[in-house]
Length: 190
Image (cartoon, rainbow, N blue to C red; front, side, top):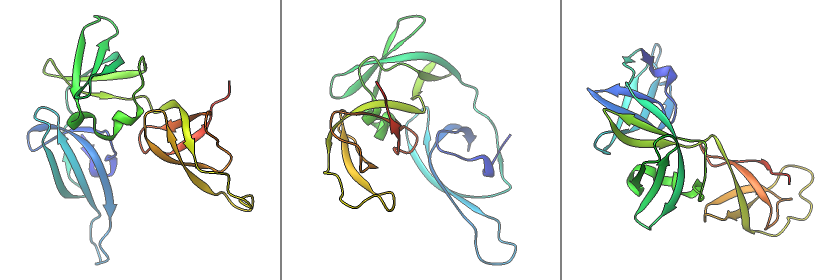
């Protein structure tokens, strides 16, 4: 059983009789005495793609979703669909922007380490690796006097995603980005 305290982005659970994936979750604790914490969630129905927002009190329990994961790699985008290939069967399948959302910005041709999520024989989503390496195509200039404390500046990577990076990063460098929240992890050497 899955408890509300286990909620995190990307978690799959059975909610109101349907397989759901948590897209976003924030926790709040009411100030009243004895108030249980509340998880404000945004979930996507894995079969229909419909988004659902709900507030759930801690203490509730939910069933796990019966799903299968398989290794896949990203191939290309035709502008409306993003195409993937199963690593074992070599079958190709498309997913659209409604399913992938912001994760489109982390996909590069040939990206591996991706897993497909299959429910009832239907591929409903993909799970990206925790980090991806992307080249910086544009970076704001170095901030003078930024040595006293960590200063962040704007940078754009090869896929068009804009992120905050340390002031020493310049255009042309490769950086590692966390796909779960889009933050800079480290500079990639070599």
